[in-house]
Length: 184
Length: 143
Image (cartoon, rainbow over the protein chains, first blue to last red):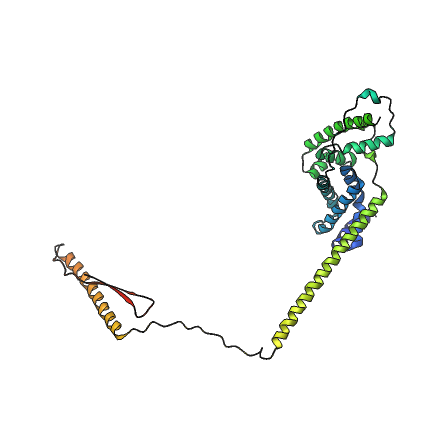
């Protein structure tokens, strides 16, 4: 049973490589959450994330012959998603936003922020991180990849990734606090 | 609030409609590209058919089957020399031969007489140059 379950996706890959559109759509369904979620966290806007995901899957379609097994697709998709998001973000100049102005703490001490609002703030705060830090935080903390995988995807070293994640988290904390005070 | 208050993984998923949108756009683009590729293939096939048809018509044209003899290029032979030039040439060749003989004889005499030799009489050196024009021959005669 498990053997069959393992063979089916690779079968979809081989059928897609032969030009079967339904098989390619199946491959897309297998990876669409990974691609769209990563793109959304990197770009911040769902419209941009959809554009990036479209470009990523078109590149996958053009490069299908380069894959021998389904397991090769996942890291490749992460790498291409990050690159496409870098390009798109730079093109649309949305990748790194200016940091919000500092607001004195005493003005907002009493403000209460709901969990949903906090999520919104955190998502917004991601947009203020430098692109490499943001990619490292998204892949490591949101996608749950291990440090070595993130390093391979970003073309970096595990030490650098660890540093980027650590700095990114510290920055996020600071940015979220600023955003909270500004809205409070 | 700190990001550590809850996991960053709880940021939430993109809306379900976005997946459908992406899928529809990707498949639409793939089909469009495939249509363009097929159309280009058909245009290429049609162009090849037209070329073959034109080539066939040209081959079936009256007179198209006659064999054209191959053209042979003949290299021009040596220029004809006038009798006067020919006599001059013979004289010059004879003189050159004599000059060589004389030089050899002088060398031999020099070797056997211990290097003391009467000086050989001066010989005429002739250099003959042929030009592109067969009627023009440059002759240098040096005493």
